[in-house]
Length: 431
Image (tube, rainbow, N blue to C red; front, side):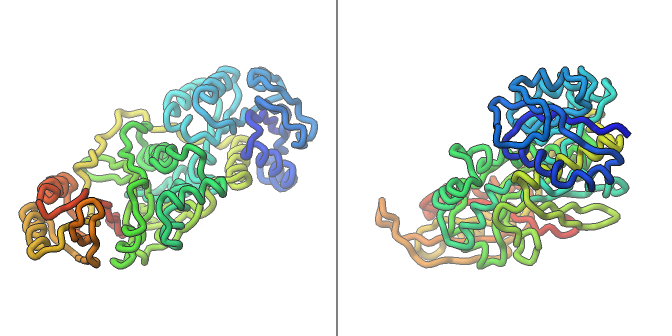
């Protein structure tokens, strides 16, 4: 068969990884694809003469790749949104297949773009857009295609996981752990996209749409970052037998589909709780298989390139991904309606009766307590008031009911500062 001819747009970290991997493993890739996969065109804003393009034609214009007669599939590794969206649209218009590593592109515009690709009779694949080198898109769309998916929970942002891991292992503050992540190149100078949960929310919206055959709905993802987590919270969680992870969770319920990204206490007995550093991990629970764990590097040149090349092999074989669901989206469960257990850290005055008053309010909302820890006394620097952190782990409760109780507890004269609340997920068969 004729080679599959690739036009590569973007020659940064991932783009260079694609060039390296296609050259290094050319013979095995050809054998698995049924034909050779070669790069014929490369476009990048900045020439990189140090990168061996093996004879591919270089340009600084994306149009030169899209219009080229010697390109069958366009690979986008540029990142960003507007230019990538236009490139994908132009590629479909030129009847060229499209492979991307861009999670924002798919999460925000995938519905319309995949519909355009289907109408143009071309394939779009995006394995590298979620969890880097972990083949999670393929697992959902192929390996588990015969299953009914119940829920997914995953560590899908390496930067946040590195920060929480550093806080747990070193007792570092959030600020110090973030600075370490930036020094190592794991976090950007402006880390908001990662630590505020936006990156994870992009990825979760894609996983949810694939799992439940629904349209993409990024705007429906409840998103909460890790900036409020303290080293003390991590210490108290450990004392209760948990580790704090930043999870993306999507679940099918009788009320609709949950989609949420937030810090979560995970039992230390779960494998997911032991995934540290920049590693990603995703647990999928389905009716036939039960729980399956997928773990590996979530970013980086060669892990992401591995996913891109796998997509190119599927394009060479003619394997198209199914489009996202086209029917009206099912109801999305508001965060107030979810059911979870909760970790509460209540900064309370060090005086008799405080715990009784807190317990009475929780009981009035039918919220039962599983565990309580009361730590040593501290003195507030601004007022000189003695206070103690009271740590409570609740049983499962509807979040709206917990919020009502927290409003009442926060108004007690005994509570001297803002209450911290973190959701708890056991990740058993029921999620």
